[in-house]
Length: 332
Ligand SMILES: *[C@@H]1O[C@H](CO)[C@@H](O)[C@H](O)[C@H]1NC(C)=O
Ligand SMILES: *[C@@H]1O[C@H](CO)[C@@H](O)[C@H](O)[C@H]1NC(C)=O
Ligand SMILES: *[C@@H]1O[C@H](CO)[C@@H](O)[C@H](O)[C@H]1NC(C)=O
Ligand SMILES: *[C@@H]1O[C@H](CO)[C@@H](O)[C@H](O)[C@H]1NC(C)=O
Ligand SMILES: *[C@@H]1O[C@H](CO)[C@@H](O)[C@H](O)[C@H]1NC(C)=O
Ligand SMILES: *[C@@H]1O[C@H](CO)[C@@H](O)[C@H](O)[C@H]1NC(C)=O
Ligand SMILES: *[C@@H]1O[C@H](CO)[C@@H](O)[C@H](O)[C@H]1NC(C)=O
Ligand SMILES: *[C@@H]1O[C@H](CO)[C@@H](O)[C@H](O)[C@H]1NC(C)=O
Ligand SMILES: *[C@@H]1O[C@H](CO)[C@@H](O)[C@H](O)[C@H]1NC(C)=O
Ligand SMILES: *[C@@H]1O[C@H](CO)[C@@H](O)[C@H](O)[C@H]1NC(C)=O
Image (cartoon, rainbow, N blue to C red; front, top):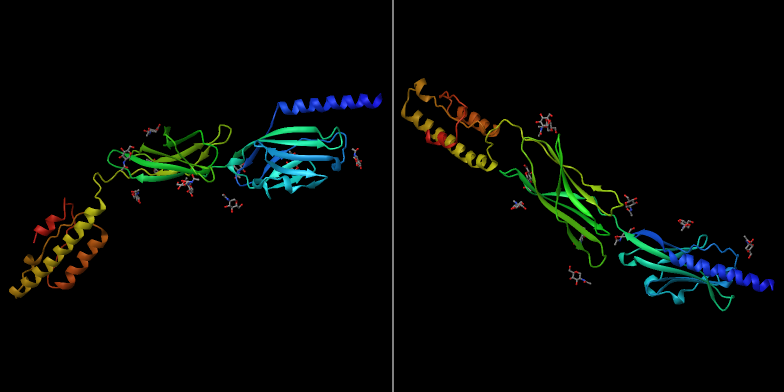
């Protein structure tokens, strides 16, 4: 009588436990290429010996990850995909799955059979919903095209090797007074082997020459995760003084013209010296007009070369503002 009564009681308890555990699946989270936990919340209230238990985990395709038989791992029933990827923490009945891949996400089940009771009865079962994450890299801003006349710069921002798909990616433009947000359509590429995502955005951003601006790129992964910020991309205000800055290539074309002018001048002085045996001081003096924006190097060349070749002639180098280097050439 007593025996049957306790048997009945314990059976109802097991059924209740089954219903309870089956109702809600436990959530577990793992990082890509790391280890995930698949807990089997079993407390062994009856202190059943391990010899009498069979414990195993299976995935949603009913492939076995691990089986514990008579207190020992039974590798025979383990699926090839999970070979050498698991270890059991017997203290809290948690199976650890190593080298997590994106395709490992999904539902797992843990079962505990009592071998000696009623020909193998499930005394415990629970579901584990495993999700897999991969942290996106810190977003990186790259300049595609420099500031043009219309004060726009084209930039892209990219972040790689994350999972799942991020929610949002945008640029922030910060000036001393304001912060403005620039949204862009995310370009998402999935790696077909790892399943990880690479994302990027491109945008044309207004940058005014008179203001300092810092550009940030912000990635919002899952809603629960914190935003990822890029390093700031700083663009300093242009110094306001030159109204029409001379581009580098104009300077480069002006240099040979100037050198040609100097050579011409030297030839001029030599012929002058040969023709006139008695030099008059007023005739030898030439005024060379050099553009203000010419480099120091160019000025030095003019200053060094002239006195060295024509020691008799006193030449005044008048450096003044002129529109182009052409005037110095036509001067001779
Ligand atoms: C996984 O991590 C190891 C080091 O922990 C690293 O060498 C390997 O490249 C990683 N694999 C992938 C696919 O990221
Ligand atoms: C099980 O125990 C290990 C350490 O012994 C711990 O890292 C892990 O978080 C535990 N798992 C659960 C589900 O309590
Ligand atoms: C469980 O059983 C073992 C022997 O099988 C015994 O040593 C241990 O004290 C028992 N624990 C409890 C909590 O009953
Ligand atoms: C991913 O990022 C989170 C939050 O920043 C951090 O706690 C966690 O350790 C990171 N994981 C890996 C594997 O880098
Ligand atoms: C933009 O201009 C800076 C100098 O002003 C130069 O160093 C940089 O290479 C340029 N970048 C591009 C993408 O043109
Ligand atoms: C910059 O982006 C704008 C708008 O997307 C585009 O029209 C323009 O051609 C781009 N300029 C360069 C130099 O790439
Ligand atoms: C920023 O604020 C200062 C003082 O409030 C103002 O003088 C300046 O014009 C503002 N600059 C911009 C770019 O709005
Ligand atoms: C994603 O980015 C990584 C790192 O830059 C690169 O190795 C990989 O090939 C990219 N994947 C795809 C699908 O473009
Ligand atoms: C993965 O993508 C590459 C090109 O990006 C392609 O050549 C290859 O066949 C793809 N592999 C699979 C398994 O789809
Ligand atoms: C821009 O920043 C520099 C320092 O990086 C500062 O010296 C300059 O005054 C700033 N200019 C403006 C217009 O805020």
